[in-house]
Length: 104
Image (cartoon, rainbow, N blue to C red; front, side):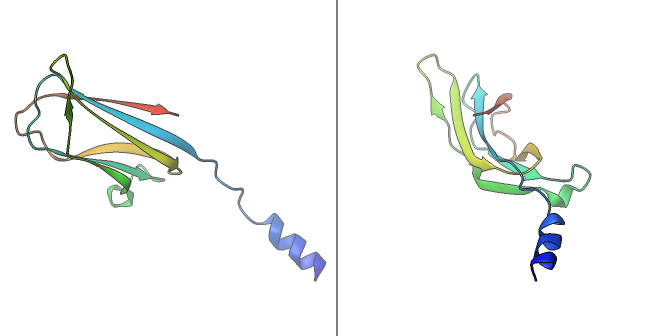
């Protein structure tokens, strides 16, 4: 009936807005072998609630003209409330990594 349809429509949660995220990874020197995973979740307190998103595994870098090494990943759409970069395997050469996350 029209009345029950209106009632059920009003109990639905509103659609979640989405965005796109860009992840820029930077190493000053060759990091060697590594594995970083871009993960999303809606619950910060439960580690098992995080999942690797789409093509969010970084294992390859490109050497730049200045000798640094970089990688970039863009994930579209991004729906999860939270994001983290999980270090599944540290860089073999013990080189620090900086990650810049930008909404695009």
